[in-house]
Each structure stands twice: as structure tokens, then as C-alpha cells.
Length: 116
Image: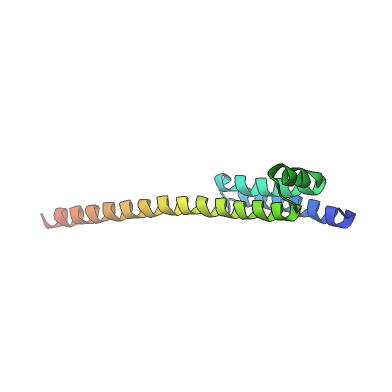
């Protein structure tokens, strides 16, 4: 790996991790969501510092081109993020439904108390 590319990759990995930590610190990102993003920054940093690790993983899973392995794991990461957000959206949808039903019941009860 060329030295300039290695330096840029290391900086990207470090900046990504610092950015995520700053988002958590300023409460713009919850800790539970930061784990996946911090692991992504750590992987970028790890691959920049030790590029032979990508070649090792590629050989281990039987891939000829290490770049294909990189794209595969990038796609896998995006699928996991999408699945995680789908689970969260489903839970929030159920909470909104339950809250709307509870508000309707409370509104009905309030109207009954005002009338009687």
C-alpha cells in the first residue's frame, strides 16, 4: 500500500471515530447506535495500519481480489444498519399506536367526567 494512501486511510479511520465520539458526547447520537459506527471506524483504521489483514481475510473466505472482500463487508455493514433501523422503527410504530390508543381512552374518560 502506498504511504500516502495509508496515511489518508488512517486519518479517515481516526476522524470517523472522533466524529462519532463527539456526536455521542453532544447527545446527537445515542450510545447504542454508536457501537456499529465506531466498529466501522476501527476496521478502517485496522485495515490502514495492517493491510495484509484484508488479504488474509480474502484468502480465508476464498476471494481472489481483496477489494471484493472490502465491498462485501461494506455491503454487509449497510445491511446490518438497515436491519437495526427497521427493528427500531417497528418498535417505535408500536409505541405510537399504543400511545394514541391510550390518549383516546383518556380523552374519552375526560369527556365523561366533564359531562357527569
